[in-house]
Image (cartoon, rainbow, N blue to C red):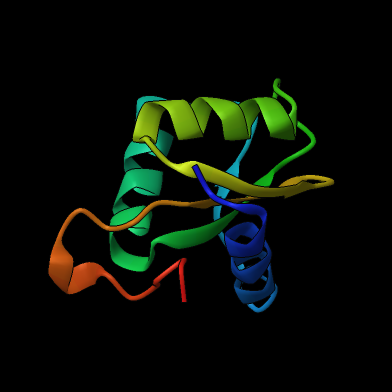
Length: 99
């Protein structure tokens, strides 16, 4: 669980990120979840855009992704969500949320 200070730091870092994954009308398929897993392992922090044609709300998509991938929700504004997970492989760890 992230503290409010950690979440604020991650939100600031996410400001410069571009949308890494787009979720469209197909919703959260296995392929989308696998893609998010791959990006999280490489970058730890990612921004996802939920298109208007998706049949789920952004906060709902964020919650499902966080549960499926053991990630932490950072931010949900409009159609964009930000999630964070410490990389499982030590060589992929770039972000220290406690710093």
